[in-house]
Length: 234
Image (cartoon, rainbow, N blue to C red; front, top):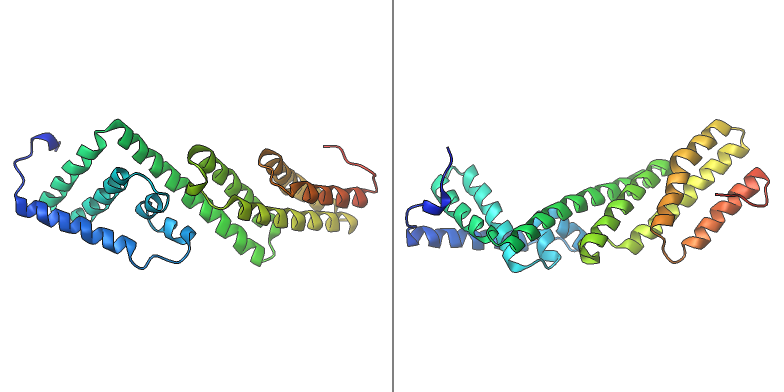
């Protein structure tokens, strides 16, 4: 059944007071016992992400209302959830606030995916699965760069940190490829080169960092020596 939020009966002041207390309690739950690092805190919820990224107060308030509404629905408090919904809709009537809210939702989703790939990359590196580690860090880098380009660095992970890890992964995969080639495992070497090293080099060219040139030169020299050539073309 469609409910007309604009024509709800007058709200009992006592209910408004209860709603205000729910919002306050939810805020306290969100801000207490936050983990020490900003990466961890931003991952907790979209509210933590918006708060850490210093999104506008009205957007954070709208997100807080959404969480309270979900809590009230789980408790089957439909009357209070309708009242909260009304105030949430009122905030979102501002086109700028509504658009900013949609942007934060999208950025938070990308940020979670970005962190997933970074964590997977680190875990694969611990298992010495450097090919998979490189694949994940490349995906992470593309996502992170899109976040930074759209909203700025405060919404993304530390690009320099990702850049250093990306260099390490590329060097390890390059070494695996050259070792395979010199050991006579030419097919394995070609697979490593085509599936991992070439995409890795492309990521370097699209999003270069200071110090990347020395890493790329080292990779080039390894393959030149491996193939007994003085130079390699792109």
